[in-house]
Image 1 (cartoon, rainbow, N blue to C red):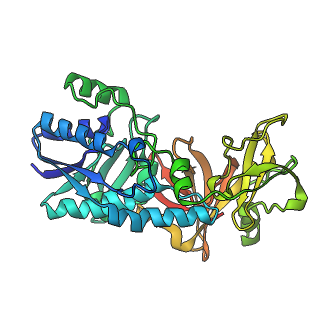
Image 2 (image 1 turned 45 degrees about the vertical axis):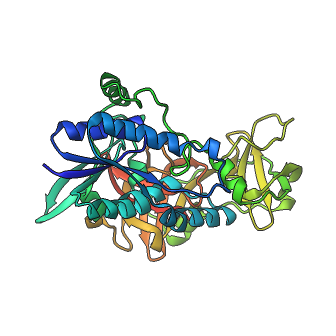
Image 3 (image 1 turned 180 degrees about the horizontal axis):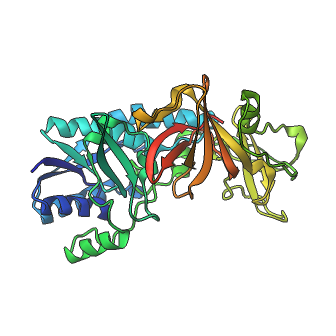
Length: 393
């Protein structure tokens, strides 16, 4: 049996993950990560890390396993928070949860666990892992979770082979309802606890609340861009010029539309956002088409069918391409068909990937809504995560 450190978050998923490992006879240690101390950025009564830590401790006590709190706040600020603010100020939308898994849970936290003599780190993610041997080499595969509505493989798409070799996902083969039932049968304090909807380090504090504490409000114009129609283009063999055209972003300017209101800071908004604009009187709901953080202008359009919300493709810079399956990395000049996801819980979409010297062009079978710079695009084959990358445009 192995010594396994479980990242106990104070939620039901990690609680049941720990229980299943204890049941299998492993030596299990529960660790709770405290990643934030800055009370000037978050309101203490809105960030119940103490409550989560206490719940994790109660679960550990119930399961009869050792428990301790580890402080990773310095590393979190340097690797996640500073990067996140810089991205928002630049008008991009980072994904702190994916970064948290790559930089904190399966790097800093993993090293902490290994220093405790652990063989593996386990989390309550809804994904699965298996091991295959190809040409005499051991390959770790990251697979979707059984519960399609809860599958979190997207959040782990930046992990590498070394990290996966030490990772365990004990609840990946279960449905959420089954996990809750196990917790209820054990009378765990987390059995009926709601899933956290906040940032991975500030509990229930919402992203806008967090951003507004750090990025100061600055009034600017909201400009509405009139609706036009775009013509779809068939995907096949493509020259670089065609790839660039299909993945290029729309360039809006103030002359293209009319001022319809004011916002409190373009950096608070993301492509495709509908809520928070506070502008009424339009025939259809308004959606954010683009945010210009340099001029502090927000470009919006009416209706979900507005051409400015849709693109046929996206581009990932060479430096931002990551292969979970290093043995399947595409060569320069190669194209390959994969199923793609550009946000959590999005339905998988067919696309063709083109590897060029400058990076990876992704051309979808159909138009994609709200392709957002800074977010991650992840490609799959038969339910396995092959790779991912940061969307440049």
